[in-house]
Length: 121
Image (cartoon, rainbow, N blue to C red; front, side, top):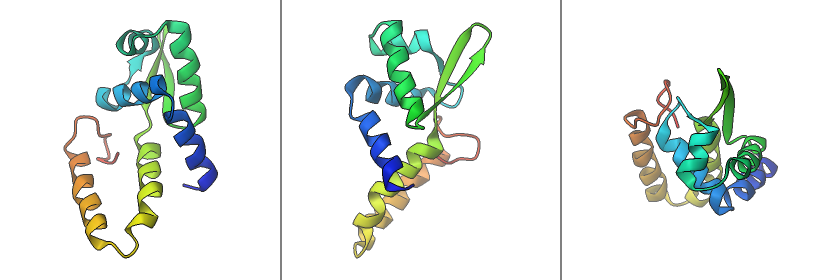
């Protein structure tokens, strides 16, 4: 991930509602959730959630697809993993214990119900 993309992603996540949406979608899994259900879950109006989902999609952190009359949103686990890797890469230089800790935590992705079919976040 390059720095401009990382800044865009972090900016999107710096807003409380958007962070709540991403956390909700990560737990929901690759099947995603309809926009109306997301609005209910995070406690905002449907028009408000649409605004925030658009920002998250622009940042590449969520994807959308149409199912019948609903728009279903899901977390982009690959983009979220790239963002975490971007953040942690430089901090681990000269600190192998930090890298080992990250690798250990990464192993939970393959057993997590929120991981995608390839087992990566």
